[in-house]
Structures are given as structure tokens and as C-alpha cells.
Length: 488
Length: 92
Image (tube, rainbow over all chains, first blue to last red; front, side):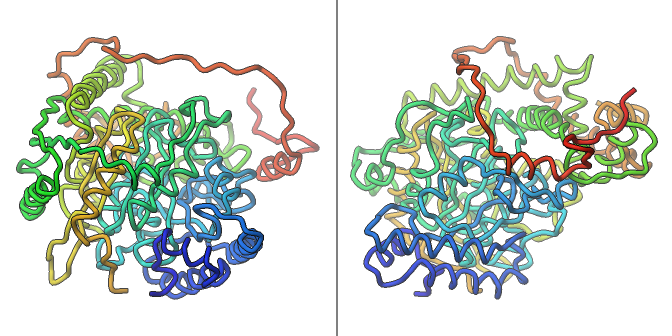
């Protein structure tokens, strides 16, 4: 197999035994980027020089006998995390030429661990979207079918990993933005609990639900990345204190029987019939393999999308207020006074979806409407959270589809913002409640002569990434979907 | 909620966004549609206070820490400078 298609665990073995060097692996990925990025448009920036220097350093550390999970492993990161000395654009014109003065904590940890950053990946502008079509620099394409979206907002990360441009990719998930692209591209995508991974250096969208996590080829790989990026950080007061479990070891050694809750309302008419059939069969396989399956009711979960699309625009309208054209970013000098200067910079700098969300949030927080919208949404959010709490008294994880359908065509939904918001129907609940959730390859359907992947989601109780990884690992062992790669 | 063009213009002013006439029209239609979907929340009986969820404050010492001059320079160099300061538009 070509090195760029290795899992992290495979590459780890080859690197540790000296069969391959980090430089060779990094060069293979860079060549792959050069060949395929013009086709799938997954990367916004490629840092050849920085990557080769980091790989040479990793090789030196390996030669000196150092061994650790990500030492010498090449990766890509969503262009919404600050990377010192490199452009950080959030796929927005308002930050087109912005150079980050420091590294996000996640980037600093990966650097220290010896992982090799190859570059930055495409996303929906400021992570607002579910397809990458809101990127100011054009959409990414799905390697399984180039006429389809890779999902979003971490769609560049997913497309890149699926096409073999890197060995893992970092994404962010505020309401499904790691899990949904993982589902569309046949990958494992892990959204950690709120506060498990430091948000320092992440360009904030929804401060109460933003999380950072890995897109990987296997559950074990996701566990290896999480182990490096997770942990308390003095620069983010919302990070969980206490030590980080050894996720990889727990995944391999913890054989406790699994209790899986199935949310029947997630399998109703909103779901593609082919996916429903396949998921019902998957439940049988899980049961045969020894999992206990129990039906669970989450009565308030149906309100998670309307709640999410009040909370998220409200928080981001405030977070994006800092982009005013002063100090950095796009600036239009001809305005007469300060107010028209602000309005011109922001009117020109933000794309249509960012402006739509800023307006929606400004409205939901405005005098006379905040009680009916923002405060009401916060109150219903508590009911959604309480539903989950009750459920996890009975089961270890909940199983739902990740998305209601496989990847859709580019342009199919970009004029219908509400349809795009409904992409988050199975995903927003875990985000609002701050819970860990994972999407794993769940099967394939035929569409237009192409085979398209779709994902299964496991949700766990707060802080229980281990249970989520265990469930995903258990599922991964009884099928071989994760081994399939797109023909590109 | 049904938004008129004046409503949208008012929200755009609050949000500090200059919008074209076409944008005002489009956002009026779209925000009306989105908020009427959100209005289903009104049917939920809910209480204002959290039900069973404890939040706590996180404190740290208020101490001065050095920040790298290089990073400071990099941060400041991206705006218009005058002397050692960042130049902004006149406020008053």
C-alpha cells in the first residue's frame, strides 16, 4: 500500500521499525496533494517547507529512540485554527490575508508530539455550513463522486483524508461539522465532549458548543489523535481538569459489554429508506455480536435544530463583531465616518451565509425578541440535555444515523438555507448538550451508478469518549466498510 | 415572524452590515422562513432556569505574563500603524 493511505497505527509501526522515514511519508503526501488538490480543492494552503523541516526533525527524534503515537505522522488542519506565521483565513474574504501570530493550543500540542503539519484545509466560511459551498474560495469535492459535496463544515479535512492527502485531519464540530463530512466520505469523525480539547486559538463560532477533534481512517487512529490534543489548558477556562485517559489502551483492553440505546424517532420518515433498512440490519449484527440493544425515547430531541439555529446565530453574531476592519483583515478606506467604515468592511468581507447568521442572531438577541427566541431556546436546550441524562442512566451509548442521506450534489441545496440547517437533524442534540459523539463508516448505497458511503453515529455521556470509542470500535470489528477507499 | 424590508434594514444596522437592495429583499424572505420554523419552540412548555445542571466559575491568579515581542509585532503589523500604535478611524 502507498504510505499516504496508511492508517496512523500502520505508519507508526513502519516508522518505529525504520522501514520508512517521516520524510518519505511526508513527501508522498505532498506529491499526492500536488496531484489531487487541483481536482478536489481540499487544501487552502500547503506548507511544503515547514512540513519537510518538521519531518526531518521527527526523523531525528525517531533515530534518537523516541517513540510516541503521532511522531512523524503527516496531517492537515482546518483553516480556522491559528497556525503561527501562516495564513489563517476561516475561508473568509474578511481574513484573506491574515497571518496568525501564534499557534492554537491544539497545533502546539501536535507540534510537540512531532506530528507533521502539511497545510490548511477548506471549510464553509467561519464553519457556517454543511457542504463547504459557503467557502469564499470555492467548494471542495467529494473524492467518492466529484459531482457531490464532501459535507461540512470540515469538508476540506474530510475530502483530503479520504483522497489520501494526509494520514489524519483536524476538524471542528459545533453542530455536526466533523461527523457529517466523516459520514459523506467514509471516515471516522470524533467530536469530543465540550471542554475536552482546548479552544484556544480557534476562531470562535458558537462558544458554548465549539469543539475540535480528529477525522481519521479508523477508530484506533481517532483515539491516538484525541490522546494528544485532549487535556486541560490554562488558556481555555472551559477545559475539563484532571488527567486524560489512555484512549487507545482502553479501546483495545476494555471488554465490558455494551448497552446501546436506539432512538426510534431518528429512524422515521425523515431518513432515506435505504439507510433505514441498512441500519436495522446493523442493529441485528450488533446484537448478534453481543451488544444489548434498548429502545430509548428522547422527546425533546426533535427541537434540537430550531434551538441550535437560535443559539448558534446569537453567539456567532457576537463573536464575529470583532471583525470590523480595524487592526486586521479587509478594510475599505473610502468610508467617511466610523459607522459607515464598519458597515462597508463587514458588508463586503462576509459571505451570504455568515451575513444571514449574523442577522438572525442579532434579531434573536434584540430588545423585544430575546425572550421569545434566545431565552426560550436556552430553556428548551435544558430539556434536551435532561433527556440525554436520563438516557445514559440506562445505556452506555446512543446510536443514530449521522445524516439523513448520503452526500448530495454540489449546488443541490445552496439556495435553501433551511434545508441546509436540517442536515444537522441527528447531530445538533449532542452539540447542545456538550456530549462526545462519533461518526463511523456505516455502509454504502448505490446512487447514479456510484457507491456512496454513509455513517452511523454513537453518542455518549459527557466526558465518556471512551464509551463512544468502544462502541465505534465494536462496530468496526464486525464489518469492513472502513477499509474501502474512493477510486481517485 | 414576517420581516419587512425596513425590519431587515434595522437588523442590518444593528449588526453593522451594509446590504444591497437585493440582499435586503433576499434576507427578508429567508429570515421569515427560518424564524417561522423556529417558532415551533413556542409550543414547548419550559421553565427559564436550568433543571439539573451545575455550572461553576473557573478562577486564576491575575498575574502579568510576558508575551513574545515577535508575536506582538506580527499581530500589530497587519493593521495601519502610526509610530508604535495601531491607527484607527476618528471616533469623535
